[in-house]
Image (cartoon, rainbow, N blue to C red; front, side, top):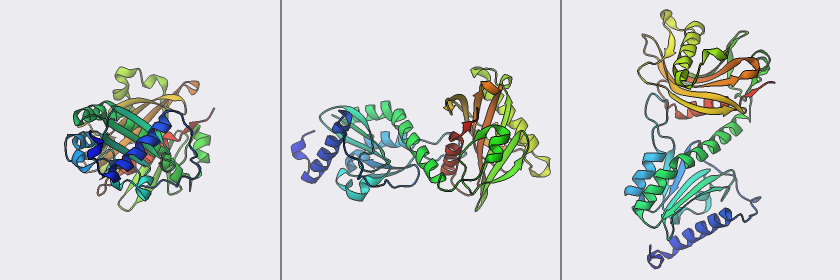
Length: 332
């Protein structure tokens, strides 16, 4: 790239950004105490890149990765809601968005992650390369790592917003040995000595949290985990969740659930995402299920969130449920 051909305003913005990223990566400490608070809807990602890159193969690579369908939803919804702007527009208030991706041509190939660069909390990534083809390669190679960083940032923000007004969960802690940060808009729909169902009413539907347990022997190993978890949740759902006309609340068998390995409160957990349905009825929606291995108590603690909201997008509803479940703390 010939910097002599770059408009002066664009060059100054780019130089400022590259300098700040370099300072961060070299371990230099900056006084960030006066940074403004970040803004933006949950999972709202600002893309800073020249229009000519956005409209070509670079923009296509960005969209293919950062607007890819979210796992476990019944309809395609993008991982992030993206708003693109050219570098010269990335000034002032525009720099306050909580997550951003800056992609540009440069005289070197480099990928950088930065924290609280222009606002706080904020997570950003800079991808620069000497050609469009190399930009595409760097985007494809590093997207998973960057997406994970953005996801963690947004989970923390969602949990921060939840903590403003919390539901009292003493009974859940006492009976099930787990505490979690649940918004005060939720209520207990059903509670026994081995099962809790909490729900929040929406304008048209509900979001729901289930907490129950099963012996460690019920999930045998990695190779059978998906099938074991489906059997467990279908057994519980068909018995304990009331639906009309003797139908059953079960995992939809038309789509294979996604299975991941993760941790909750430092303990190993299987994470399953998929869709549920009421058998023989036109009802369904997404679920996220964590089977947390609690060896001390010889159990898997099952934490699940599911949504029934037929007329609205479900990505952010499920994201809130995920953030709640990830706040769980198992009692010793």
